Length: 334
Image (tube, rainbow, N blue to C red; front, side):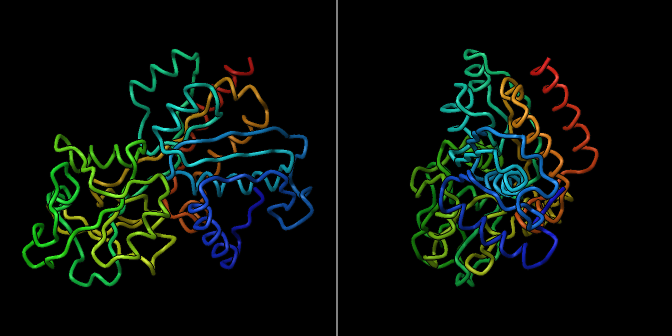
């Protein structure tokens, strides 16, 4: 595959680009003519592919989808992509299950009410695994008084009736008000955080909620007593502006990383990431070809791990996803 990931400088440029895109909110690469090989758009590309590709959903998956689309659009300049980080639930409810987008990115599986909405609108889909994430809890780098939290302490901070000051969480913490930044309730990250940490205690409304993970990063980096959570890629892209906390699930603190997420040591905040492809959209050859390209890239360690900051899929997972996708394409194209 043509790729811009062969040099360290390219990876650094990509990482900066993804960080900027995270704050920008949407990605449109229409009119790209630069090939991933650095040529004129004809090196290894099939320029016969053309047409729009509309994608909504998870802000967590957004950096990975954007990176893959950047390369695909460079190889196929006739393709006109539009990617919006609307949140997993917002994407399903407002765009994908109403038939208005070709893909929906998700940081958790589709929910029963979303399945019902898709069915009501005749939207069939195929679920594809994109990567593994280490949902990351971050504080300000100047907060030298904290390095880790237990899952119980994390729940104290984020439950529906939360601690108001840090010393309510742990006696040795400062008597300072907790400033919270987190995912909006349309986010799959929000849903997953409740499932993994809060359960029946619910999620506080006393926080600054956003679908823009870069806004969370900016908020936490601007306040010594702030805390936030989001996908690992956003910490990976801002390591000097943020401090990631170890999470103690009973066996001592474990810091989020590609290694601890891959090994399963980082519990309970490791999770699979997905994209859902509309089967009717796969009848369009340029959309089917992009879906194949996306799944092919899920094992690309340079792109998925080094550039974006997630754990790549295994070869076995990729093979299974490709077979599932080919079955869906056959169903769509007949």
